[in-house]
Length: 292
Image (cartoon, rainbow, N blue to C red):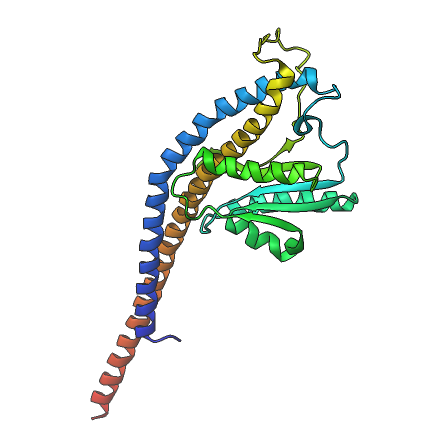
C-alpha cells in the first residue's frame, strides 16, 4: 500500500493537472466564439459561389473546351486526398475522426485498384497517416505558426493542388475536413473539389435564376474555378478551426471533471488510510500501557 506521503503527492499532482485542463478549457472557450463566427460567416459565400459556378458549369461541362478543373482528365485512376486536420492534440477524437474517414476512403479506392496519394494540411493528420501511408504522402503543409487563418493560406494550398493537377499527378481530388455543428458535435466531411461536381437541380425545385456574365462563360470559368477551389479550402480550414476549439473545450471539460472525481477518490483513500494508521497507533499505545 502506498504511503501517506505518496498519496499526498498524487493528490497534489492531480490537482495541478485539473488546473491545467481548466485553464485550457477556458482558453478554448474564449477562442471558440470567434472561430465559430468566422466559420458561419464563410458558409454563405462558399455555398453561393459554388451554386453560381455550378450554374455556369452546367452548360459548359459537356463542351470540348471545358476547363480541366471542371471536366477532369477523363480518368479516375489516381486520387489525391487533401486531408485537413489540426496542428495540436488534446481535442478528443477531432483529428482521428477526419483521418479515419480519409483512411477508409483510401482503402476502398485501393481495393478497387486505384492509386491514392495524400496531401496533408496539419501536423496531426500527417503523424497518423504516415504510420500506414508514409510513401503515399506527397506534400505536407503546417499552419502551426499561423495565428489567424486567412484566405492567403487557403490560396497557397489551392495553388499547390492545382499545380500538381496541371502536372498530371492525379485525376480526382477530395477534400477532408470536420464541419462544425456544435461544441459537442463535429461532422467529418469529404468533398470532391477536382473535377468540380455539378449538381443537377432537383425536379421539385423552383425556377432557376438566370445569370448574365461579362465576359462570356467560357472566359470566366478558367478564372472562377481556381478561385472557387481556394474558397472551398478556406471554408474547410475555418470549419476545422471552429471544430478544433469545440472539441478541445469539450475534451478539457471532461478531463477537468475526471480529475475532480479522481481527487475525491484519492482523498477518500488518503483519509481512510490515515485514520487506520492513527487507530493502529492508539491500539499499540493502549496495549503498551496495559502491559505496564
